[in-house]
Structure formats: C-alpha cells, structure tokens
Length: 135
Image (cartoon, rainbow, N blue to C red; front, top):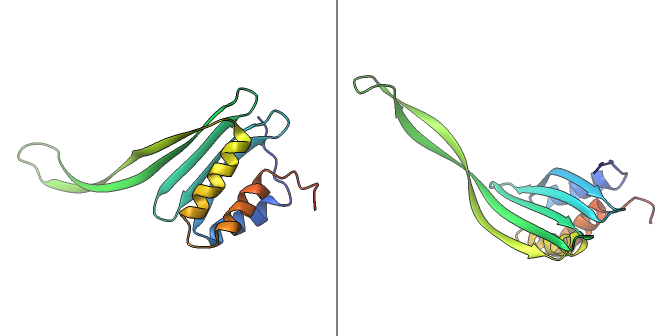
C-alpha cells in the first residue's frame, strides 16, 4: 500500500488536533479499499483502524500507553534506582466489515471521545480518505 499526502490531509490533521487527537500514521489504498490509520489522544490512548473492504474484514484496536516508575536494584547490596518502564495496555477491539465501515466507526469513536465537536471528527476522518479531487 502506498500512501500519498494530499492537499486535504493537513486540514484533517489540524481538525483532529483541535479536538485533542494526533494523527500518528495513515496508509490508505483507495483503489483496493484497504488501509491503516493510527491516531493518539493527548492522554496516551492509541486507536488503530486496520481494514480491507475486499476481504470484508477489519478491526479497531484501542490501547493505552502507560509509563510506570519502578525501582531497579543491580544487586542485593547495591543502591536502588528509580527508572521509567513503558508498556502498552490492551483496552479492546471492535470488528468492522471493511475499511469504509471502519472509517465510520473510527469517526464515531473519535467524536465520542474528543474535546470538541463530533461532526468535526467525522469531517476530519473523511478528509483523510479523500483524494482531494472533490470540492
């Protein structure tokens, strides 16, 4: 799958950031109806859409990035040092019937879990999949 940056994608990125989400990666193949979109919320929630319309399969996975401070001791008599340990917690997965239906579900999820307008979330996600040809 090749990804291309279209004129509308910077607008989608700005719209997502205005409602508290950051676009981490996007790889969309509109011809074959498949793609992967990864967005992250300010608090570490990561949502990944992976869908393929030709195979009629897809999923939206929700995970949370977590950093914990743990104490590590080199040996029994040595000093203990606090260190950050990063991990990812699986929150859940939703099955979708293809990439297009996954985009709709992703837009609804972002809208429900954002700091702004739900309609803006829908428009931003639609702009990601736009070729830029329509006005």
